[in-house]
Amino acid sequence: METRYTERLRFFDGQQLHAEDLDELEAVNRELRWLHNRSLHQPGIGAGLAVHGPAGAGHVLVQEGYALDASGHEIVLTGPERLPVPPVAGEETCGPAYFDLTVSYPADEELEEAETREGACAPRGIVRLRERPAFTWVRLKHDVSGTLRPVDPRHRADIQAGMMIILARARIRECVLAADVSLAQRRTSRVADRPRIRCDTSYAEWTWWSVPAGTESVIQGVEAVIDTEAACFAQVPCYSARVAGRRPLTVEYDDDAVVTVFDGPAHVEEPATTSFRCRVPLLSPDYGVGDAGIEAILTAVRAEWAVTWLGIEC
Image 1 (cartoon, rainbow, N blue to C red):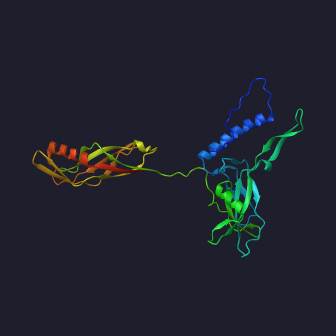
Image 2 (image 1 turned 45 degrees about the vertical axis):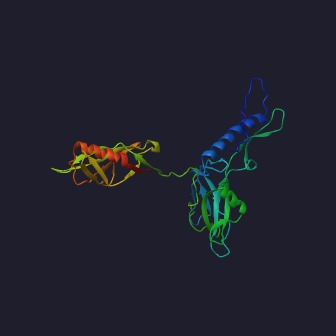
């Protein structure tokens, strides 16, 4: 974190103000704004700055927009800008010349004077500067690996550092565009949205479930509500689940009765942002185990089985 200003300016009645007092007040707010920008955003295009340049044109049109550089400087274009393409015939090999159109934050000495005023006891001074983004056509050449890179190492360093933002790439021959400008090299200042992916293994309070499967049969198994609140999903994700633990289970009940429990594939029911219901059909050949057998099966699966789940929020 780098900022020069850590002091709050205060004023009092009767204080004599000088130009540097008010300049410093503006500088404090500006530096803190830049600190915010570079802390929470990446350099790139925030909005707009669309570039239109069809093949055969001798200029490109840049629409209004907003971008940030790596220092947090706001690059603002308030109206369309018509920029002539570089006046080059092409490469020595008779192919088109490649250029990247870049935009950057202007230095103070490059700004246009918008207003000056006479001082009360001093000569005329500047009171407003008009900020206009600095546009630069960066010449590119193929390196030994065939990759296009800036010819000027300073441009290369500034682009890599995020101080010059690429808006478009152009191929130029005979002082006009040899093809429509390419926008593939642009990057946004907002972090690209990525799917939220979370996974976990949860031991659960299994309960018994059964549903009719015909006139004389039922499907039976165990189910549990799995808590996913810690994943902080904002929307209902796509869940998948499986049972982790020892299988098959051999369960004893009523002293000498034994049942072997085989499980089918787990499936997800009632998905929500904070939970889902996991149901597992049991495939034992005989379910005439009564209440005592069911309790024994539940005790066994609660001790042995966990649910490994994955949630993907797109």
